[in-house]
Amino acid sequence: MVFMSEKKPRSAQSVSDMIRSLGAVGLLVALLATFVWLTRSDSEQVLREVDWQAIAIGAQTRSDLPTLGPVGLDKTWVATSARLENVGESEVWRVGVVTPTTEYVSVIVSKNEIKKLIKTYVNIESETETTKVIGSKTYTALEDQQNRVLYISESGITTLIYSTANWDEITKFVENLKVPTK
Image (cartoon, rainbow, N blue to C red; front, top):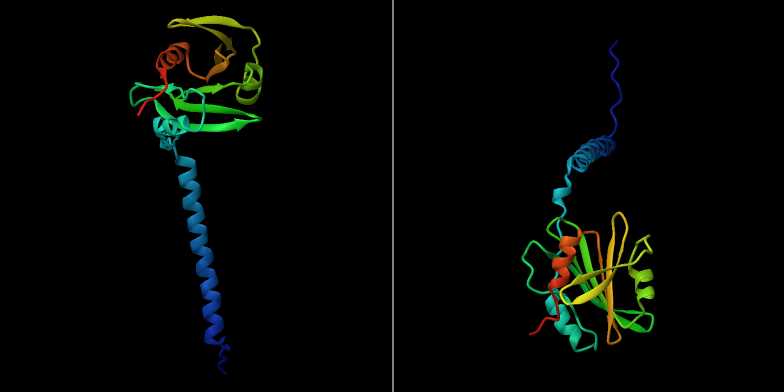
């Protein structure tokens, strides 16, 4: 006597085969994604460059703040942010740049008091102030192991430079701060 097994209907075979196939494909995709994630390098991070000068020129029509930024630096300095924003009742102009050594430096301009700007924008532990002369201006400086801050108040306008870069790069940045023109 030969026993034949009962075959499942064709539709039931197709569904179970499809589910097994999807599971196998999903497993392969998960393995590939894990491999790509683990073998990626930091050099693949792409900086999103912004045209800070165009944004600054547009902001000049809406604000009485000087829209300072690093005019004339070479292409190794990449502007990644530029904006006119409100902090409380006051306007703030900000430009953020990645330096040639991939550190960060920003200029923040406002009519706010410096303590409010530092509290809002700066992550620094030092409260020991020194001075730095750059060009014809004397800035107040704060520094801890990773962060450096320069600020100056002139004619009711406070300019704050916040950075993780070294002092040479910060000095070059500050020396090139200007309001762009059309």
